[in-house]
Length: 107
Image (cartoon, rainbow, N blue to C red; front, top):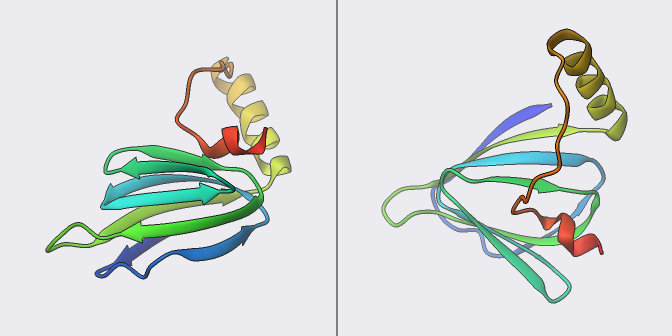
């Protein structure tokens, strides 16, 4: 599922329990994601990845503008199918790279 979110004002910090995996792209504004004592900030033009879990999330609109993001939500099975298709069709191989991600929260 792909969604686009727009907010003209910051709604404050919200608690969210995430049951699937998601990748988001920040179009405008800032997103803060907190878990336990860890916090990461994602700004315009950055991509983030979230594992299933419990998080405190705050979307902050730019002054005089809005917060805007695109989020792709998927299950682990869907990700496996996507990677398999990419591998077979385009000889794509996933390579581990340093990524600003909240997956570090799950250690």
